[in-house]
Length: 303
Length: 303
Image 1 (cartoon, rainbow over the protein chains, first blue to last red):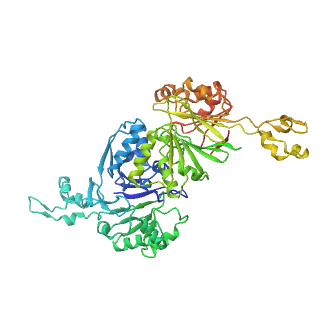
Image 2: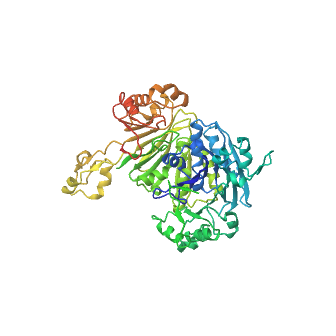
Image 3: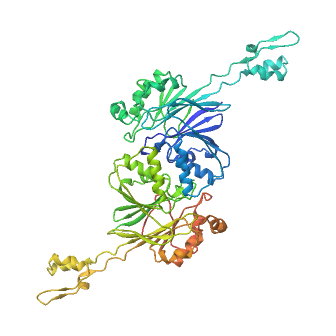
């Protein structure tokens, strides 16, 4: 099952050097989940060949503009392009008010429903579940209410050893039970041990998205044992005072967090406009956590 | 005196094929006037090498998103980049409410003042005047209240024939009077005829910006005798029914308007996303009005 994230924007608040503000597209089993939506996200989707109408779920971490100013344009274009299926939006409650005001003054009545789930930035919550994954929020420490998002794949059914089952002429009616790990007792006394005819499915993978935040151990429990951890790394560690003052994280801190929470891989992003080149941020992070990459526009990472 | 317009966006509502929604930057005597501000305008300014902070005046024709969704991001970035000088915004009144709501929820208190002048979409008005130009609105016919903008250079002072004045040792104290066209009577009885020592300045030029509108003769009086007329041309004339239905103009109509109002040059833009290539629109317009160009991203036109 595909589980991968494509970076649509890597810059912090002011866009520069052809870097776009934050947005990421998660593909889980060919369903598309947009995470944050900075200005220009709809253009980025076009640039990287994604159809915006395939997105059915949008997650907005907080209401600083570099994380949502592109949403109203994206939703408007979907309307103009004839979308009718619902769009589910997980976001702080005020976002609904902001969107409604703009639709009101453009006299736009969307052809499709927006279904809001309002996030709370005080306790972690399970906010979404389908056959493929669950999504939970966790509480970040930023200047305004802000949540991270944890996307966890559902455990898949066991894989059948089909050739062996066919050779032994086991009726396919039993396959669903086998996939669920059940041993089979046949009327003739034969017992078919599940472990001889199925293999365990791969361990479910976990993607954690840490938007804007001060270094704060309180959310570490929520993000532990990620396969891929995205963490903002707005500044180099020499700018720690500035990071603390603006409630952001340094590349060194992001790497330390990845190490402490036992992530397999770290992606860093949300780079300050002061950095024209980004390798110093990458090198700083790798000095603590080797398996780090820059979350650069257009890159896709398998989780 | 420089008087030129650079196109930052040429697409109608849904951005495609690397075309951006509507925005134009007018440079009049090295003062910068932004006209409409679709999503991504701040990125377009960076792309074409303009410093956003040089803009002191913003004109928003109406509150359809493809004409203003980029404004909140632009204003936020100017704040983050330390702007302190005021920004004057000419727009429908509801824009102030929309911006305020977004600043409120991001807990942003701008370091610089926004000075609003609210436009009316029922009668033409003079809305701005400085040493270089005047700006007037005119009433367009769109689905929501919408104004066009007419930028008219001020008549410059007469040009002195400095070599002749110096050769005849006319004291420079008289130069300001001469520039204003005054004949000089000297105490010794000599009379100095202004026309012998000065030349008329070039005729003031006029730029008219016709945002989204149905073909409607009522605004033609306001835009007559333009040096450069920008007119939307969302559709080919074969889509006239669709143009009427959506309150837009065809390329053929835009050209007919340029001809009827005696424009010198016509720029067409606001192209529908149905047109991957644009030369059919250009050819259609040129069949009626030869001096037509496409208002394409990155092009600068001297007015």
